[in-house]
Length: 123
Image (cartoon, rainbow, N blue to C red):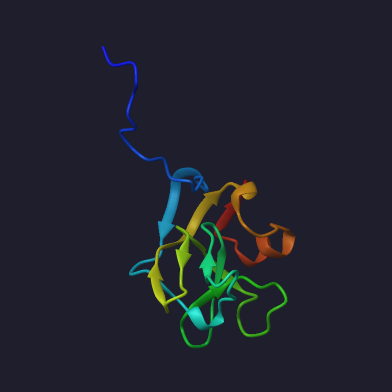
């Protein structure tokens, strides 16, 4: 009998953001993140899972910025998985309609954000 178990799988370090799978609609064909509009932290341009994203005039998406004036102030999707765009633009998945866990969203969820994202239920 082996009393020293071996790991059979790796658990992701990203917690689930969905509160329910009942009503979920993902973006068809993905969304393109504009890496030039993402601020680098410690040399990396990463966006956390659950980040609200807004579409710019160029058709690409950027992280939500409530003080923005370039379109970044109007989010329409939630990022499905964390992404590193240090090396350039990436096509990623997102949720257009979902019920998400508020505490796991990487920005403050206030009434303004709730009003801008009527198809996302923050619970």
